Image (cartoon, rainbow, N blue to C red):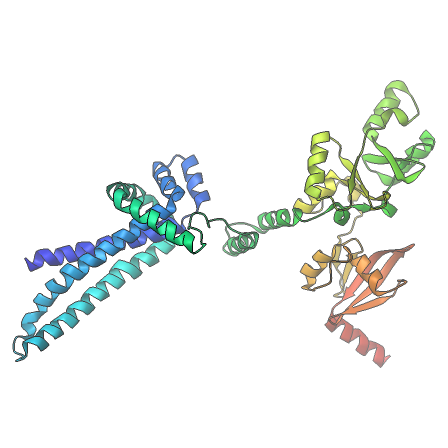
Length: 438
């Protein structure tokens, strides 16, 4: 009889291991991975999807299984093992002492095997092999839940009511990841080689994309190349020779009055077919957006109205700059260069002497990320704006210091700061020592 009971004890420990491994596996496996396996034709994944869609209920099934097996072990294990060891203490005069020693040995043996075989080992295996174990146990777990449904139904309802009394959410309701959590997951996936650097960059750029506004990515008014309605056909054609763009905004009088845009393909096609030397028949509508318009909204409008350019309007109704579809897409995929961009230099470029040459249009958040700074982004958007805020009338050679770094104005066009050279603290120290020696 004791052998039969010991076999029952072993079976209960294995059942404990099954429920523990099942619980950890179904919690750890990703919903997106289950969907992928279903698309690949896995029948087990279909069963696992049913579990994932009602995760609370199946976790409760596992908990009931673990509790029942624990009670069974306490009932059968202690008495069976205690009787097996009792004859070792028959020579002890005190019967109560013999029973106590047998009980202690039985208790620790059952505890050891339950914790090690029933808890720790299956937990470690399920954590490392969550997907195959979840697929393996999916159908048996569905069957167990069907058998225990009346009990689990009552327990689930009771548990949910108590949880809601404390103002908490169930596991299923609290399953979504925040943006920061997704960034951490991406970072870990990159470190483990699951995704490459480009993929991580694209996804991170999409998170940033959602926060960018038109003012931050626009070509400023001072750099806009326009056609003017009142200019001759030849004058506007000469603009193309210098600009080498596909589309040009058309101004009526000045840049504060942009009335449309022209695609040079239409312009030249019209000239070839009709030999008309006028830009007016080829002027198409252009979008106007405010400086604070999110670029995702601007892109949606461009897609809907099939217009690839928008004028950015400031708070006074004047032209602040322009944005194109290319400018918006570059926020996700990085710089897009064509055959006419051969002479363009990177916005942030490391120099041979160790300094960094930065374009004045680089956004402050990019400078903060690149150098791990905390420059205030509330008042201005670009590094050029930050320089102007710290020097009333910047000129070539003007210097601003921050955390040991030196920001030196390298190039100016009128009142616009075009290039800034950033010198690291160690480079600044070397240059200072060289000047002292001279």
